[in-house]
Length: 222
Image (cartoon, rainbow, N blue to C red; front, top):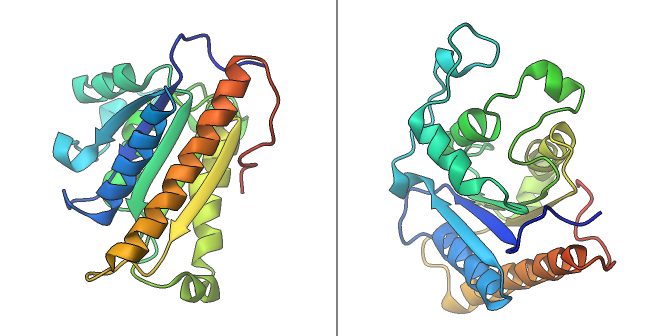
């Protein structure tokens, strides 16, 4: 089945890091540059620079009397509707995503989707039928995270859950460890090259889908 019927292939790039010049911001820029170099559209949402409010309000809960979609959430829904890829980029703090990213999932990604729909895998949200890419960073090295079982936990939350709950086409996770102050330019460039290559692969996959071709899958929800 081809991707959604849009002239342009669109990638939503959701960045959640308070540092305007952070390595996470560099990842988002590298990903967007690669997407545009491949003739596709990158829609970047820098949540801290947008001043996004991550706090879910009672009136936003699906099924509640007087349920409403606030203007800031509606603006995000309008900006991202029709995107074929959702790339979430954020650091791991104390074993968890930033509150900003969790709040964005609560308020925007899950807008209007009930727990019953998620259990039945009938969630009709922004992610339905799209591809998911989660790029995370941490100060701890990847080997240490593996010892703690944290990387597998991140794959479960960031990849498999959203992949299944919203009937997504694919989900891929990428983690970059040992990101600390003083990171060498050479190491940073190597990581950013890997990010650009991942973006290129996704662009090729989307291009093939758009034109009814078949190429190997990028991710399978793991």
